[in-house]
Length: 296
Image (tube, rainbow, N blue to C red; front, side, top):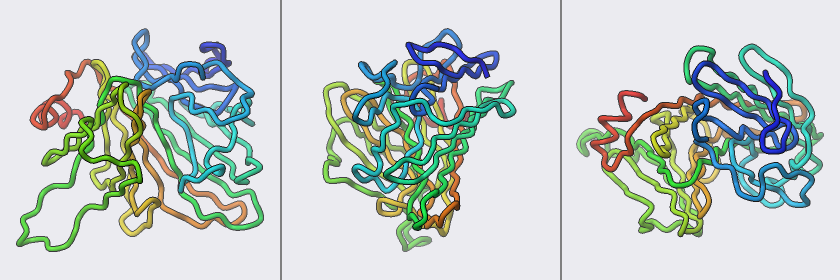
């Protein structure tokens, strides 16, 4: 765990021979950078928000964060614009602790580890209820991806009509969801969702049983792995993954099951990340099968 200055913030750097992570210490926390050493950041860093602190309103900033679902204002937008409570060394990584906020009463923890030999990151996210009354919530883990890339979302394997008569997919749509948006390509086996600096908010949610979603930017491929608990209830129409984009970025989000936390009870949700390069941009489903499927 190396302490560095990153664009005006005291930050924590984790690195192996190929890749590095940067975790802000002065705000958030955010995992603000994930990339090859000396190369570009796969995550977004939002202009005008990097290096700031003490703002009177919530700031996205970019990178990866831990949030609480279902989304609600002001609940989800509790301020995190000051140094958080704790950052401590753990084997191959760091554990961050954000003290309970006055709105939610929920403590947030992330255990962030980087494999010393492979480009693999594990992030264990934990919410703990520190208020006297129970809280019904879900662990929510948005990753803000850099502009100009595309998300690639696998769809369930096709089963003949004669062998399966019940639905196998859950989708959620928001009031601002537009399905004929040219950023989307709905294929047979994959959905492509492209970030476009000329287009505003759009979002979809999926019950993702395939266990992964990918984002391509330049020649980098970011893959996020997460579970779907078979019998669990999830937020937002029972989906465990969501994808949001606007003019500045695209978010790849996963969610844990909805739970009712009594005082001092916790819920955790783990993601695993991998980073690959060079990987040519996929323009078709055949490209995904040829270039990405062997890596995933």
